[in-house]
Length: 417
Ligand code: PGA
Ligand code: ZN
Image (cartoon, rainbow, N blue to C red; front, side, top):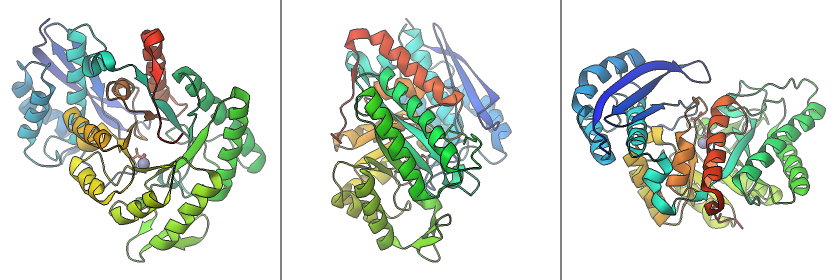
């Protein structure tokens, strides 16, 4: 089947926060692909620029004027060529001319169109016959930091990871139970708790950081016992948003505490040990590779993960690899712009033994491509929330993939057990 691009269409749609974002259709001679871009709130400084000057309207204009004439007629099978063309049209290192989100939506829509042109699902097209491993869902249960408006923990995310589950469906079900259990515990703990949720569908409660640990620990233990498998948990500190450059300290407003790098390290080591955390994302600000390396060296059976630290950027990853900063990496394709760039970073990370965690953004659409990418890229974990439409779109897509694979489906192996 031929997969020559006949047309590309871009439009403005909305994400789950009601913010405008870009959606792209790629139409080939025998297939069709559609993808839309997400948006972060606690973005890494090294991420590509989402839209050119003039915003989304300008991006749509440039799409018609600069991009469509270049891409129409190319073969969608050649993802690298498509992505390189996007880089060439843009001509900058951070997609500030056409917009990183424009590049993202085109890149993903093209991959989808190519797969569809060959009658394949995206994970089959990209991953081939060996792509039969399902990721564990890492789900946000309690929100804090920049994902809330104060009166909540400073730590951005309290995340459950039901790593003892034997199937994806079972793991997703455990997360849903943990999420529900947490609301019951919060109702008792916080008299003013009204069931409010963040954009990622995690609860927002008027509790401190340590209280939040107690809540998630209790919920994971109870649900783990009920379901008869291990449910671990961890956090995304998103430490860049706590970091006060001038003072050289991390400000924990809720707890009325400031911690310098050394104190932050001690604090993290304490909570990792006390709560048996299996996952810690962005424990230090995005330029402190050295502290990441120290924490990684001092911990066992805990994923120390870089999100803002690496921003899915292969050069930043290479710097981290040299210093042994972290042992895990968040892969967010729209941090870097194209699928080819993200694949390069993910493969580099995996070849160095890093755990790759494919991830949504806090502002997201019902686009489910990261579910397909999780299987295609053999990512052992997907971070995509537990409830809320944009999260469920991805969870349900993985349920479908597991169903489709039938007896060939197996769960990923994690490095924490
Ligand atoms: P985001 O943050 O708001 O940038 O998507 C999520 C995260 O830090 O993992
Ligand atoms: Zn993060």
